[in-house]
Amino acid sequence: MADISSFEDFALNRQLLNAVADAGYETPTAIQQQSIPLILAGHDVLGIAQTGTGKTAAYLLPILMKVKYAQGQHPRALILAPTRELAMQIDESITALARHTDLRHAVVYGGLGPKTQIERIQRGIDILVATPGRLLDIYRKGELVLKELKTLVLDEADKMMDMGFMPQIRRMLEIIPRKRQNLLFSATMPDRVIRLSEEFLEFPLRVEVAPQSSTAVMVNQVLYEVPNFKTKINLLSMLLQDEAVFQRVIVFTRTREIANNIFKFLARKVVSEESIRVIHANKGQNTRINAMEAFKEGNVRVLVATDVAARGIDVSLVSHVVNFDVPLIYEDYVHRIGRTGRANHTGEAVTFVTEAEAYHVEKIEKIIRMTIPRQPLPPELPVEKTTFTESQEMARTIDEQRRKDDPTFQGAFHEKKNPLKQAKPTGNGRKPPPGGARRPTGGKPDARKTTGHARSRKR
Image (cartoon, rainbow, N blue to C red; front, side, top):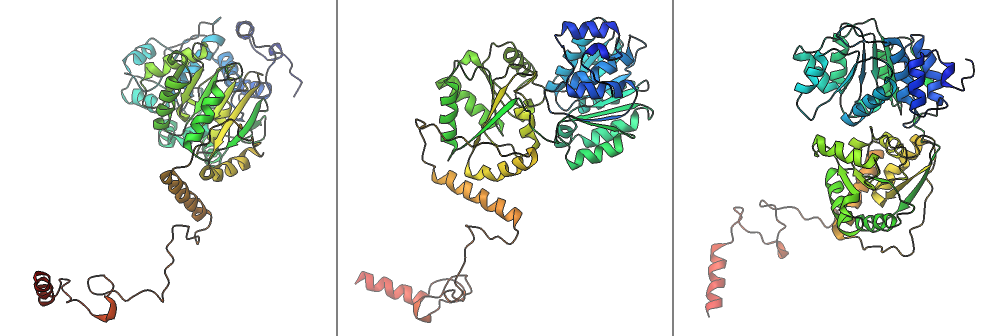
């Protein structure tokens, strides 16, 4: 393949090249250099690329070139995304790159009524971006015709697997034309995505711009080993107080309960309410959209989020990602830290790890093929004492982890009884009293002894 140093080197029309220039793109990224010519040539492509490497434009530019102009009523290209945030982001990219064309596009996703989305489809579209569930909902209503489809894209395929979309994807593959071009993009390539690619793609050409599951080279990663939850809170508060360094921050948590608690604490103690937002699956669609827009525009400095937001946040100047919790789906670590170090800007990923989470860090380090550098806790950090409840919970978790790797492990909570000290149980399940005397098998005290004892007390 000839060296490609400019978008002018691709077989793109002038309208697209002008849009690329308007968007400020100068030099194609590695994934764009390798993917665009193959997609334009009609090949099925399996793309493995870290988030933030320009993969959306890598498939959008050739799709826009192939669709070229508005025609007919029904979509000729379909792009599936796992989350509404990512679907909206892709649609925004189409708007920017197709600005000098007459191409019509729409995005459909759950979380709000389908009426407006259906009306948009009925007006005629060339490219459709969708989440799998909403796509099938609209199709079952008879409001979407897919017989003209020529190109199908699965973006963030690994996340689709994690979110359980495989049944919807298989159902969709049954109703779209067999003769089509297929493109599958993923930041990681676990076994389940490989299996999907084998049944979804025909003789695909694999494009891999970095080692599988590697983390972005523009991201500096550090890890703090902390004893407990309260010390995590103290450390996060201390870091965020340095506004000159922590300029625009995403704090990732494992659950929405923790996300809400962190948001409330930081808004009350550390940052102003105007400069922090929280987003997770329980937040309404408009709330999530408004929070994302405020963060992108720089009006919000801190965004607290669960992994539902890890895909679809495309903000080029995120200075830091903080993993308040270590993700249990290890590939999500790659996606989380991919929110910083984007568009050739450097960024930093900070991870807090308790003793119970160290197990998961070891697994993540195997996936990313590197050891995350450990950072000593700041000497002025208030280190809280671990509560008995949290200590017990972490001990149980560590036992479960060890048992998962070694089924014969019995754990710190396993009660080892001495058989020499074990007494033969009586009929009521209790040990016999000293001297070998037994109560009647009915389990009730001897009436005569009880009466006698009562008389002796009266005397």
